[in-house]
Length: 192
Image 1 (tube, rainbow, N blue to C red):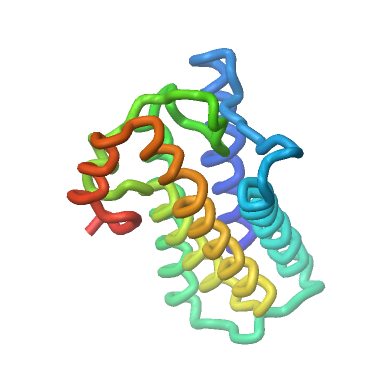
Image 2: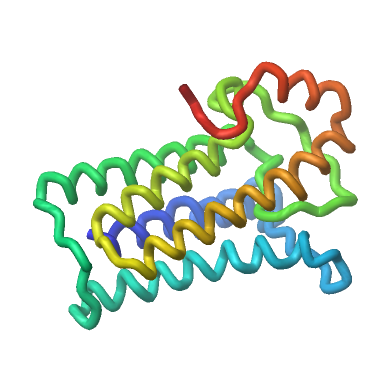
């Protein structure tokens, strides 16, 4: 189940989204920090990607029965977690699509994109990350493994750093008062 879930995430939320962005804009939407950027712009994004790589390896090892779960939940619970993971993937993909041509992985400090405040963005400033959180909860529940739980925790710490130290300061600089007013009326992650 875990391998299927992470495969769905990588296919729909990463590879397919990059292909859609390329088709629509002739731009992959990938923005890597330059090597001379401050470490706060380099490390969180790099570690974020590595956390998914580790999760993929853990899922493959579990599938090949080379690594066991420390707790095997009843099938009904595993299917429930799988459903939570699918909801997370759907939330991520819908949020990416609602960003349209402004969607990016990473921040180019010299680039200006539109501020999105409609759709899921009317309820959450970061519905993509909320979807990723649901994905991780689902993944960790389908295959309970300490390394996977550690990867999820590290990924979330990276998301916090990316949002608070890179994305939000960038959006305040680019959109000024419009973003500050948006912050006042919209939660950082939750859609509820």
